[in-house]
Amino acid sequence: MNITLTGPRSVGKSTIGKLLAKELKLKYISSDEIGNRAFKKQGGLDKAIKANIVKQLMKKKGYSLLVKAYKKEKNYVFDLSGGSFAYNYFPEATSELRNIAKSKSKIIGLLPSRCKIYSIFFLYNREVRREHFKEAHKMKLFWKTFKRYFRFPPVFSKWADIVVYTRGKTPEQIVNEIKEKLK
Image (cartoon, rainbow, N blue to C red; front, side, top):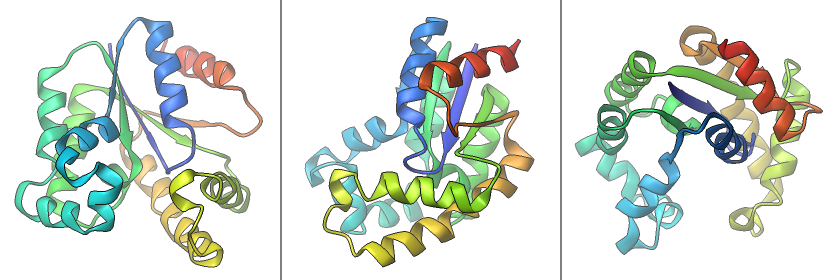
C-alpha cells in the first residue's frame, strides 16, 4: 500500500504520517527530509528556501528528487509538503508531481476543519509557535497563512482520494479515521 499525506504547513502531517506508517507497518518518507539532504551544504531546506536557492533549483530540475522517490519506493507513507503539492509556482513540475503521486498512491489531504476561519486560525496559532517563525512579523505571518490556506481545498477536491479534518481529534483518532477510510 502506498499513501501520500499532504496538507498545509503545521496541520500535523509529520506526526500523523509517522504514526500511520508505524500502524500500517509501512516505510515513512518525508519530502522535508529529502530536501534537507539535498540542501545539506546550504544548511538545510529552510535556509535554502530563505536564500532563494530552492526556487532557482526548481526552475532547472522541478521536483525531480520527489518524483524519483515515488518511482523507486514501495509500501510507504509519503509525507509530502503542502507547498510542493498545492502551490503552482512551477506549473509543469507541480503537475508532474501531482500526477505521479496520484498514479502511485492514495492521496490523503489533511485540513484542520471544514470551517475556513477556524482552519486559518488553527494553522496560524501553530505557525507562531514554530522555532523558525519566532522572529517573524506576526501580521505578515497571519496573512501568509491566510493566503496559502485557500490553495488547498480546490486542489484537494480534484486530487485527494480522501480528505480528513483534524479539528478536536488526537493523532491516534486521525490515524484510525484514515485507516477506516482506506478500507
